[in-house]
Image 1 (cartoon, one colour):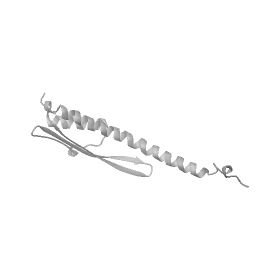
Image 2 (image 1 turned 45 degrees about the vertical axis):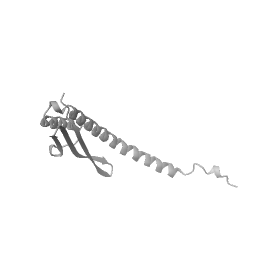
Image 3 (image 1 turned 180 degrees about the horizontal axis):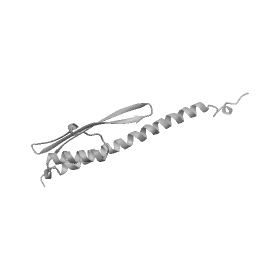
Image 4 (image 1 turned 180 degrees about the vertical axis):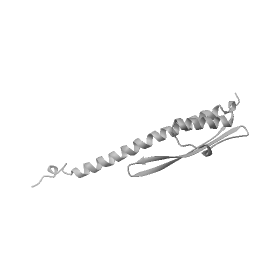
Length: 122
């Protein structure tokens, strides 16, 4: 009579497949998380610029955001950044795509940051 638990652990193929899946998840996560963090930093910077927009011109705000995107290595172009003031409000919109290179595929991750805040005169 063959005991059931004498056969446990004999399937090494399943372990190898799970390790491959785990490796793929770690690889994709390692590529995505830094891009998401840099994108969130740009959005936070845009919010900060909106808070102090009463003191600076829209041209200067736009230039600061473009400089910060360049520092963060995000591909934001001047034509894809809109900074406007209307009736005591500032509106900003930034759109860009970051290519994520994976071993067999290049994924274009698109971002769109939209801000619409009141301008407070300090």
